[in-house]
Image (tube, rainbow, N blue to C red):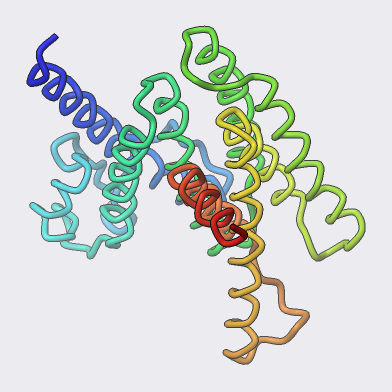
Length: 265
């Protein structure tokens, strides 16, 4: 096959990931808004909180509708939070990043929605101090089924690695939670299990990098919180650091591992 044709196919693949990412990001905005309130993410359709007008399909195009409407409701001119297009655009970008980092489509198809989900989890935990079971349990089931399916089609993932990652990362945080009640929530433990499942399927260095980045990020976050006047006993959500570490690890664990090992040569 000609190089030009291969390049065109790769570009179309990346474009497809971008479009799916934007749509998935739009869904995640619903998850972020409704899940902490224990509302269904399926029904009813989204509507303006002031005038109650149901958002029409033409006004629900990711990012584009927000721009065309100048960030306001078509019916009552209520300002719409910029968080919606930001989450949509960020998720689209992460989907493309996953497609570029993993050229095997089955692996990229697992990593891409996982990265988007980390955005939603980080926002929910930062805002509400919870990581809802309504997010982690379905995600564990979906990715628990996707990994063996991808392995079957030669997606470059490891089923034993996924199982070991789940047990190691989730189990490690479970021990921390049991030894220091109040210092680590069970939501963090379940999130770590999910991260271990997905990243473990890619390789141990991905799990190790995610754990290290989460700990370092949490430490920096604690120092910043203390500097801003928060007490040592004030709870700091760990979910955003777990999610951030997972995203960075998924996209750059090989490079981070090489850099770290080079320090000891």
